[in-house]
Each structure stands twice: as structure tokens, then as C-alpha cells.
Length: 260
Image (cartoon, rainbow, N blue to C red):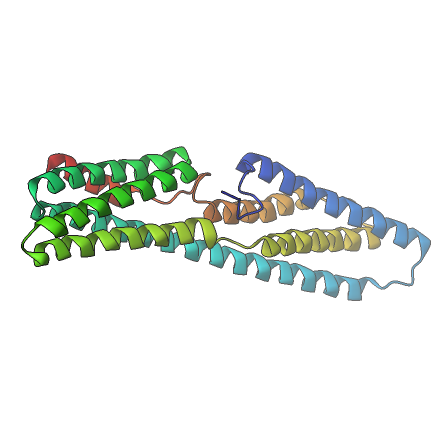
């Protein structure tokens, strides 16, 4: 399955080091250019440059806020879909009791495996194999539902189960869409890093132009901006990192199935 994000296959600690290095190099490059310009000519005024630096940093802050809001919103959506999926699976498991004995036992066994596959897949980060096995189980469940519809006299009972099974399949599609497809686009990542380089370079250039010495505050700024970028990357990637979509609703359904 192709990656949908620039940072999907990069560990967060490597991304953090790389981002801090990019920021510091940008500041240093801008500072050296500013020192060069300061020594070569005094025609460039400091005040207009300072205003442009402030505008550039403000634009970077806006872009970071926009991207963070996008990632946080998608994270909340994924949490909600997990809850909806757990409710749909629990309902399907209960309504499987309306099926004939053979279909009931087989369907409930498959639903138990389905939940275990979903939970284990997120914990291990093996999304591709999890999605593939989940879709295989869905087809098997649907075949048992078709068998039940052919042999059962009451279509109402079978219809109730089929409706709940359809909800399970729909929630799977929602999770794939939110977790794999609806991610931060590559162009936004490129613009974000490009704007970071420009803003940090402009800040360093202003420092060199004024003739001031390098400040340790540059290191603090580097970690501050890099930390926000790493947080955005972590929120955007549901398969790895420190912030993962909680699976507790599915764990609770798994426990209910075991108790049942």
C-alpha cells in the first residue's frame, strides 16, 4: 500500500533530529548572509527587514496552526469511528443469535476473529495485512448471511443481522478512508518545510544584518518549531508514533464476546 504522507516511513526521533538540523542550518545560513551583507554595505535598513521577518514568522505560525488543526480534527474523527465500529460489531454479534445454529456459531466465531484482527493490527502497525484479512472475513460473514437468508423462514431476523453486518462493513470503509486516504497532503508538507526554511533563514539574516552575535535562543526556537511539526506528524499517522487511535471500545466488545 503506497504511503500517503511524506513522513510515514520515517521514525519520529529521526524526523525530530532532521527538522532541528534543518531549522538550525537555515538560521546559520541566513545569519552568515546577513553578516556578509552588513560588512559589504550599509544600505539595507534593519527596520524593514525586521518587519518582513515578523511577517514571515507570522505566516509560518499560521501554517502550523492550520496543519495542526487539520491533523487534530482527523485524529478525533478516527476516535469516533472506532467507537461506531465497536457498536456495529457488538450489534452484529448479538443479532447473529437470530440466525440458524450453524450460521450463528460460524458468524460469531468470525466476528471474534474480526475484532482481534482489528485490535492486533493497530497495535502492531501492520495496517495492510489487517485490512486484507478484515475484508476476507467480511466476505465470509456475508456468505453465511446469504445462507441464512436462503434457509430461514423469517426474513425479518435475517434482515436485522444483514443490516448490522452492513454497518460493520461501512465502518471499516470509514476507518480506511480516515486512516489511509484522508491524510495531510504531500504538498502541504512541502510548503510547511519550505516556509520553515524561509522563516528561519530570514530570522538569521536579520540577526547577522544587525551585527549581533549568535544567540542560544535560536536553539530554543529550533526545538519549539520542530516540536510542533513532530506533533503534527504524530497526529497524522495512526499506525505509529506516540499518539495512536485508542482501541478501548473494540477491546470492550472483545471482552463482551468472550463473556458471551
